[in-house]
Length: 621
Image 1 (cartoon, rainbow, N blue to C red):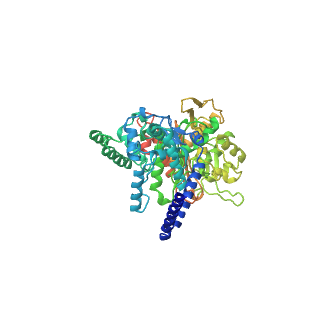
Image 2: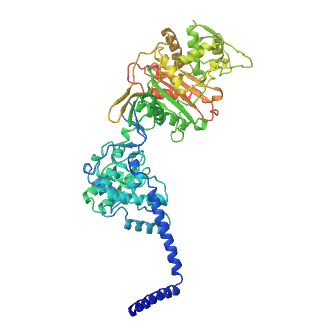
Image 3: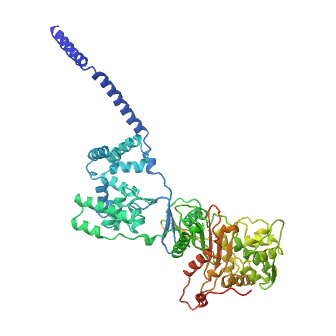
C-alpha cells in the first residue's frame, strides 16, 4: 500500500511537471497540434499520390506513334514523322564514355544515392534561392526514368511526389545498370528521337556503339535543351555545350588529359549530307498518302520517294532568291512542281518558307492560270479539224456585258492559230473558243489532269477558272509524253524497319488520251511560244515548249512547260490574292523556269543550240 502510494505520488509529480511545462510554454501545445495536422495531411497526400500512381504494367507496354521516314530517291532522309525509337542497346555494347558523359552531366552521384540525391537537391535549392529563379534542377537519372516511363511532363507537386515514389520503387526493383539502360534507351534527344541509338543514327549517321568521345559529349550536352543544342540546326551551340561536358568529364577524372584535348580538336561530324534540306511540303504530302497504300500504319516505316534532292534544293533556292529580290513588286509567294514525263514528282516547292506557313500552294491552292489554260482550247480545236495554219480573227468581241481585250489593248485582225497562241492573243482565242463547244474544252482539260470544277462560261478560255499548280504540271506532262495519260506519283516503295517490303509501285502502260498528230501540232505551237512569242525569257539551248499565263490585274503569274526530260509548272502571287506590280507570266515565272531547267541539262552537249546565246527575235507576224 505504501509502494502504491509512492508510485501514485511519482506519477502525479510527472503529470504536474508536464502541466507546468505546457503552462509555462503555452504556445507549444497548439503548435504541436498544428504539426500533427500538417503531418497527417502530408501523409494522407503522399498516400493519395501513391494510390493514384499510373499502372506500371500499362505504362511499360504503352504503344507509341509509329515513325514514318520519308526518303529521297538517292536514299537521303527528307523527314521523319512520329517518334523514332531504335533497337535496345546495353551498357556492355557502348564505349565507356557514352554513359559516363551522361552521368557526369546529369547525375554525378548516380551510383551512391537511393533514387534521390540529397546533396544535389540541397545545392540546387540554394542556387535557386540565391538567384531568385529556377536555375538548377535536381532530378536524378532514376527520377527521370520514372517520369519518362510512367508520368507526364506536367509541372505540379503531385507529379514530383509520384516521381519520387516511383524512383524509390525503381531503385528497389532494378540494379543501377538496369536503370541506366532504361534511361539511355528512353531519354528524349530532340527531333523526335528517343534513346541514344536513335540519336546517334539521326545526328551522326552511325550506331551508338561507334560514337566518338566528342559525339558522346554532344549528345550528353543536348539533355539540357535538345532543340537549342541540336548539332544539325545549331552546330556552334552544340560544340560549345560539348566543351562544357568534356571539361566536367576531365574535372571528375572520367577522361584523361590526352582524351580531353583530342576530343576538343575533333571536327564535328557533318551528317547534313545525309539529309535533304527543305522539301517539307513534299514530305507532308507523302506522309498523308501512305495509309492509302498500306492501310493504317502500326509499325515504323520507310517510304522511298521520287524526289530528286539536287533539283528540289535548287528549285527552292531559285524561288526564294527571286522573290526576295522582287518584294518591292508585291510578290510574296510562289510554288513549283517538277515532274518527269511519266508523272514522277521530282521536286515540289509549296511556298517560300515552310516554317512560316505549312499550306502547300502546289497542291492545295486554287489559282487562276490565265493564258496558261489556252492550250486546252487549241488542243480541242485541233481535235475538231483545225490546223496550226488556219486563220482566226483577232477582233473585238462582246458576249453579253463582257468585253475582253488583249493585254496590249490592240487587235491584230486575221492571224493563224500558231500566231494567236504564241502571242497569247485573247480576242483570237475567244473567237476560236466560241466556234467550239465549251463542254468539249472542259472535257479536254479534265481528261488531261485538271481536277477542279471548270465553269461553263466564256471567260473559261482565258483561264478564269481556278486550278492547282500540280494539275497544270500533269496536264502539260500529257503533251510532253506524247499524249499518254499521266498520274502524278511520289511513292516508289514502302518497307518496314526490318526491311520487309509492304508496297512497290506497279508500272503499267499508260492510256493514250490524245492522238499523236494533235500532240505533235500543239507541241510545235508551244515551242513557238518560247522561240518567238511571250515565253522568250524561258529559252533554253535545247528543245523547250511551254506557255505563259497572267490572271486579271496581275494576281497570278505562271509559266508551264517541258523539255525532253522534265515538265515544270511555276506560279507566283500572293496568299491574299492582292495584285502584284505588273508581274506577268512572261517575266519572273519564265525566268525561274529557265533557271530550273538549265540545272537539268548538259550545256556541253552537242544538242545545245548556239542560238540560245544570241536570243531569238519575235517573228514579224
